[in-house]
Image (cartoon, rainbow, N blue to C red; front, side):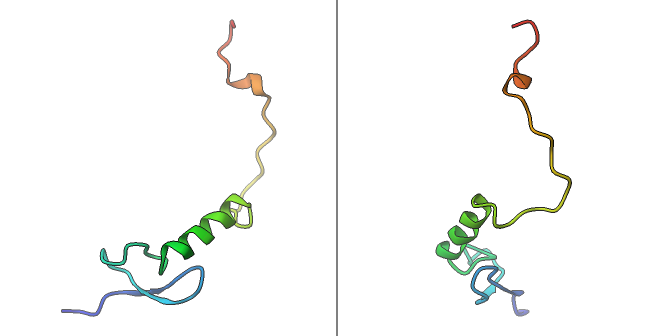
Length: 65
């Protein structure tokens, strides 16, 4: 049997076997997963691209109302 793929946890850098037995993969633990999620919510991470123009709240309402 071959050795499983090992990746580094994106949060702490700990080695993680990338297998179904690793519940939080690619993270080493739920804690590291939640830290990463919090950083996305705090907008500390982002995906590069053009910023979208601001939307008016009425833009989502169907016409005629």
